[in-house]
View: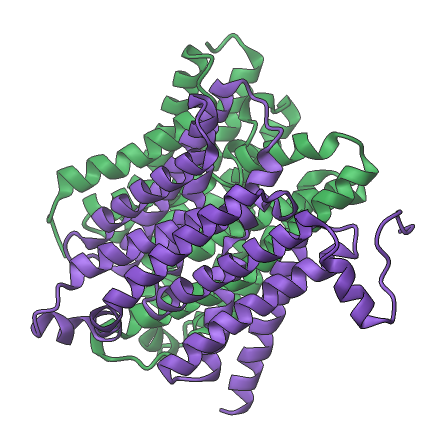
Length: 287
Length: 286
């Protein structure tokens, strides 16, 4: 298996992309931003198509679109979009989060609409190319990475994982108790924007590996499993990263062994299986 | 962009509108769009009220594996849509209802359902032979290719869903607005939640055949969110939701008819513009 070059490239890129997904996903689940992460991942699609329509490297479009959307979500986050929430006791947070979900849903439908527009444009400028760009962006093409692309993807994935690790402590504080953190001088809003922008990088990275439609599985499922199983935050972060990487390796190996099984499907199925297993195992362990 | 041979927009509005009704496919599109707007508006209103936007989005994604499975099995696509949307409603009710989990974990569980469904759909597409010819119309809809039979099925589904919604309206509204008090009064909150998810699945399954999997939301969430930002009175905002949904669909179709770009783009753009406008008005009012 390791003698094939495409497999080595896939493993190199996949390992670090999965690590970044798992680690940042733990915070996404903690902060109740799963839908925002989902929206970010779908934004990757119009980004890639816009780049295809303009005739530039699609990775430029991917990263620009997802980072911009991430920053926008971070900026407009709870304060503005969830502002009308009439917090009734314990459910106040959930009400605010639900309102944020509504706003996110409306905005990203518009961006997907733009994607249709670019699809038409790309179809006119580069005959036939748009369908392939579309399929690759939506469902990933990890077995098609070149050595250079794989090294770059691996490096970015590692950098994101390290950055999330570096801001983990203040981010944890400001996610759990934003008011207290702000009173202690933690830049809550800046952290929120920085994290959302990092999430944009993760989305663009993971889009190349498992695709814009599927990366949510790698982001949310191992992280949710870790929230179930681990008792301390830092153990949870480490476990989320570990489970995501394990799902990636297992999925790649499965897809290598069974040619008709696409790697994206195998990876996501295993990632979701980790959550299913954790839900059965952990049961009502805590909370 | 050079103008292509096709209908031209003139200053004579009456002539432009009459031209809209000249072709059978356009009449079908307007009819199907109107029916779907009615359905998506009414169901979407409750969805936004219940804060289940993410569940709705996940259900709309179910149409993808549904269509792929139907293609693989050689049955009409609509069957796959409805079967998978219904199964998705069951899965979401299962993962989000059990125990008192945090909001983050509930949505992570729903997201996992969504990712798994899409992954399975991708597998089906691959098994089918990797021909993604219909992928675009699957994802972004095919408003201009609606058949007479489809219009009939849509009208039936809409009638059934709206009747069921009316029958459940009172307890459902109570359970949505204040679940704890409703549960204390003996309203079966969990079963109502599941029933609503099934109705949502039915609405999404019907709507996504027309607007495509990715753009269902333009009709499901934007009109409802706009109307609820403008007025707090239930009946007024429900009526406004349906009106806005109809406006969005018909305006989008009308503009698309005179343009080279797809209807989905205009529908999504108009929906978002209305939402931004509504939020601005609400914000200006304080």
